[in-house]
Length: 119
Image (cartoon, rainbow, N blue to C red; front, side, top):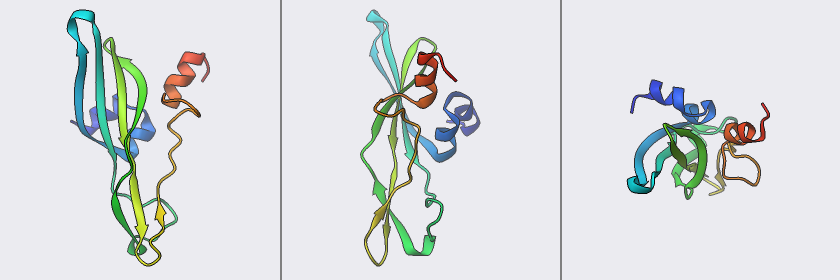
């Protein structure tokens, strides 16, 4: 999918740090309960403050399913996988710390604020 298009429909933090890997349309047309599920993987960029020569990417954490704004009457869910990085000598793992989830929720911050009626 065109990355410029994704920047228009996804929250800025997500479109900047993640890439669309796949998408699925789920649901039943007869009941009009359609969902769009977008699968996103974190880009291969080491978190700030760490040296690339000392760390290596070791795959992804399990995906988190997050609800975002509906598109054309369909519920939209983002399945987001963050990279795991391992120090080459110590074996210590690090991950980027994204705050795109509302605390204790499975909604993007933007959707949560909209539903609450705040900015």
